[in-house]
Image (cartoon, rainbow, N blue to C red; front, side, top):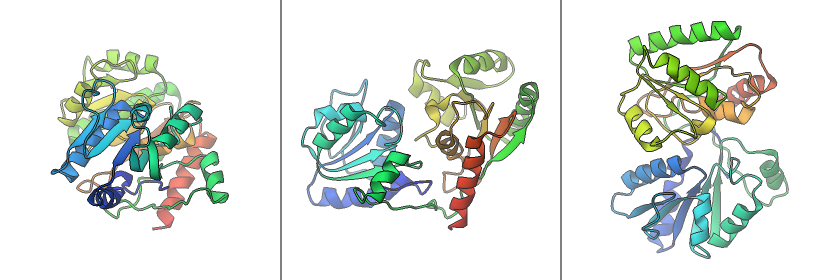
Length: 301
């Protein structure tokens, strides 16, 4: 098991190459459909001579290839199939606390499992203590720069809106894209209806149609910022973005979520620095723990 911020996907590539050179079957399972498509693209770039297949909703016509990237649910297709099964974000919905998906994954893998997470939960850490699994902790990203530590600003909610507008105006002037995380779909849609009148922006939630189109257009810099919920807290990599979390003291933003969201910043080797901003009325325990955890990780470098 590996954890925080070290470029976990890239770290798996050597293991993938070794298994494939032995003529063995390799699978890469992750919770969310959108991330499956992104990982498939990254793996295809890394292994251009291989047939890298994405298997998820809307992509099930072809289910076999040299390297299979799929959602957790699609593992039911591969009973006794994989010699190496890489499972990403095992602490996240829908895999976490899901006995059925865990059983499906167990039956899909006849060899070794490599579990990846930036935020191992208490159950996983307990399994490490009982020596049921081995854990490798890697805090340094491939480019060698430290993790981005959050800048926390306390202010009333009305002031947060004003601060956000000023921040986004400066971001636009500097040509830097931003992910604006909000706690609810309703808030995301409300902000979008207001901000789209004067800004190039889009909204991305679980209710968004044509999700791939929105992400592609964001990559193409058609939007200055994206208003989103925790649906984009994991997996996505966009070059050079900053992150702002509005109402960061909302109960939905737990320590793991906050770490994941700020982890979107500084991921690209060409742009390893950036800024992550938490706007809140008060500092919750989750905000404090997130800041402490990231600071401790950087101290290990």
